[in-house]
Length: 208
Image (cartoon, rainbow, N blue to C red; front, side, top):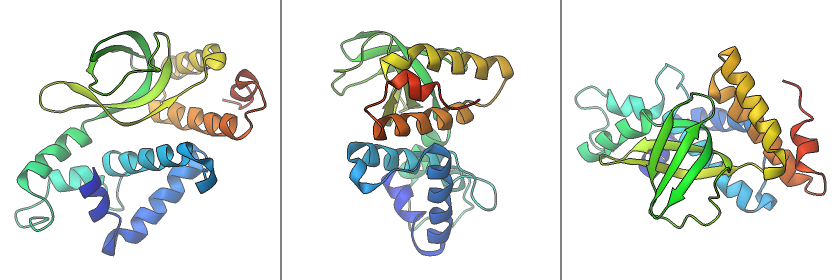
């Protein structure tokens, strides 16, 4: 991810990266340096989205551009191993999940938009991953098992019913998960910024 982000955020791609960043924060909610950990997390989410999902000006997102490169393209920038890893990034899956259960090194997740069930290997500490938690995350195959991407966005327990309602509506209407994730991100940023207000009040305040 870091290698791809470096290559596709500099030089001839710098303007495209700037446009992508503006688009992301317009849709996901603007954050600033003084937002602390939220700023760092949202910046990492932007990079994942930019590399794995966001179409470039001529179609394919950066990860796929590297995968489908013609002979001679990117050979001085990416190794064969890095290009192989780009496949896992492009085929990653970002959605809203509910934690069904957790054990040492393994989490069972329900995809609240697509309806699938995932068993995820997680070697990092899982403190804070309580059953019933609702969060945005990216899943990818690392060659051996399904693992998490770098970033998470946990939604407050007090807004649980509202988040579930929005997820159900998205599924019923056949809308893409991306629209829901951006909406929930905006609400989370607003809740973070106006923490003196109840989460349910904020999450229930944006029309769908």
